[in-house]
Image (cartoon, rainbow, N blue to C red; front, side, top):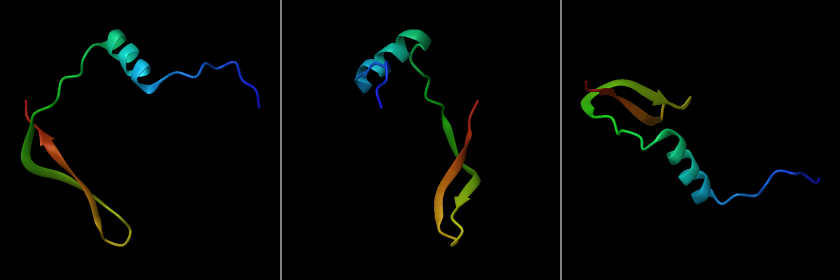
Length: 53
């Protein structure tokens, strides 16, 4: 199908986003795990750590 949407390079999109909202601040994470993401087979996929203030 034809569309009028422009094709834009991903790096250009990143630059545009940064110019609109500014650079993100990386959170400082503690060692305490507060949640675990687990697949239905029981496999651990990810851990969520507490954000320090």
